[in-house]
Length: 491
Image (cartoon, rainbow, N blue to C red; front, top):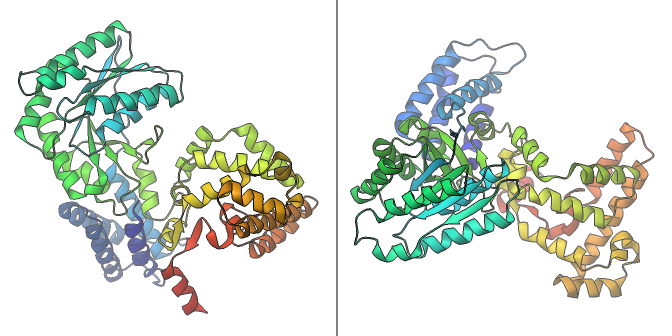
C-alpha cells in the first residue's frame, strides 16, 4: 500500500536535505513534486490542491529547529496535514443496551461486502460479543449460500469468546423482484431472531449493484426506514480509486452512512481512496481490510497510515499484531535457546509459524521504519516460505534436532518428500549449520563480540540469518532487476 506515493514523496524530501533552511522557493518546489505524486496516486484534485496549499502555508510559517534538517521538518509538517486529511480516529461502533445493536452493511457488488461481514463478525467475536449475520442480498445468485459459508467458517475458525450465527431465507430469492419489500421482511425476521437468541449484534448484508442507481437506493432506504439500524457502514473497494470515492459520496448523500470500510487496502499501491474519501464524503474511515483471512480487518488509524506513506513505518501496528498472534512463552523460549546456541530446526519451524500468523512478509517489512521505501526493490515470494516449511516437515524429528546427520542419502529422501531439489535441501542444511555454529560461539561473547559475529553471519549467509537466507538464490526476498541494475552501476 502507498508504495509509489511513498517513493515519490521521499524523493521530494531528499532533494530538500541539502538545503540550509526552508525558503519559499524550495518549499514550493518540493510541494510541486508532492502534488504530482498525490495526483498520480489518484487523490481527488480539490483535496490535493487544498492539502498542498496548507502544507506550504505551514512550512513558510515554521522555523527549522537546530536539531532538524529542512527535509525532516517538511516530513513533520506533511505528516500532521495527512493525519488531519484522513482523521480524526473514529473506530467507535455504537452498541446499545439491551441488544441487539443493528449494523447495516451496504456497498456496490464486488466491493468485498460479504467477506467484510464475516471479518466484522470475527472482530466482534474476538471482543466477546455474540453476533448474528443476516443475508439480505436476495438479488445476486448464490449470495445467501456464500454468506452462510463465510459465517460458518468464522464461527468455527475465528478466535474469541463470543459466538457467531447465520440467518438466511434462501427461498425468498425466488420472490425477489416480484413482491415489494421482500428484503425488508427478511431483515425484520432476522431482527426478531436476534432478539430471541439474545444476540448482542445483528449484521445485515444488504444487496449491491454494479453501479449506484435509484432502485438500489430505494431498497436500502426502505431497510433503513423500517429497521432503523444503529450503524450504517459503507464497504468500498480501495483499488477503484476515485470511482470508490464518488460512489461513497453518492451513498452518503442518500443514506447518511456512519462510517466507511476500505477493502483490498493491502493491494492498492496508490492509496488515493484512503486519502480522499473522508474529505469528499464527510464520513470517517472506520476499518481497513488488509487480507483475505478472518482477522484481516484493522481499525483505521490516520497517524499510522501517514507514517507508512512517509516511510516512518508503523511499529505500533506491528507490535499489536505480534501481541495478538505470537505466543509470548514460546517466543521467550526460542530466544533463550538462540542465546544459548541450542536453536534447532524444530524451534525455527515454530518461530516461522508464529511470524507467518502475523501476516504476509512484505506487509510486515513495510511496517518497519525506513524499509517501506525499499519495498519496490523486493520480490517477496511467500511460496518460497511454503517450500522451506515443506522441507523441514519432510525431515524426521531426529534430523530436525541434529541437522549434522543429514547426509546425501537423507537429502534425497527429504527432497523427494517435499517436492524440492536436493540442492535446495543441501543449501538449507549448510546455512542452518552455519547459523548454529555462529550462535554457539556468540553464546559466550559479550555484546560487542555478538555484534561482530552477527556481521560475519550476515556476510556468510545469503539474506542473513532470517528466513530468506536459507534458500539462497530461491530466497523469499530477492532483488528486482531494477535494484540489481542500480547495484551494478554503483560498482
